Image (cartoon, rainbow, N blue to C red; front, side):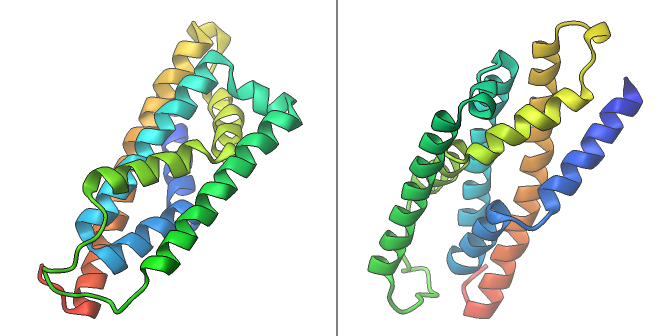
Length: 181
């Protein structure tokens, strides 16, 4: 079981570090809004993984795998949310404010944005459905509980990695834009 957990953590870390929309969004928040915004957004995304973990453990994410209609419904909701975020960003666009007077979304809004982005991404549900079972075993006991445990481990390592990415992207943004540290 120890070897399986090490393989799981290694694969999870590699997948979390791999370039993708989550990393890009965290980096964007860090460069444009600072470390705190990037980290809070990252934590929202990781909290969103809890929904997918519970769904996979309960077998609900199998619905996305077997029902094209359910998959597309969530996919289009997610796309609509991303379009809404983009339109909102365009409307709010103005000169970059680098000082302490720069006002942006609250921590709660950033957390919620990351959470919703993650939950409305059907590819994450499919990922959990396909990835977690590879590291479970009927001989080891309740597969749903194993998936829940693996999902929690995935969330923990993703939180660490996304926090590091957010911290460093915020540091780069602070230096580029001359924001106070």
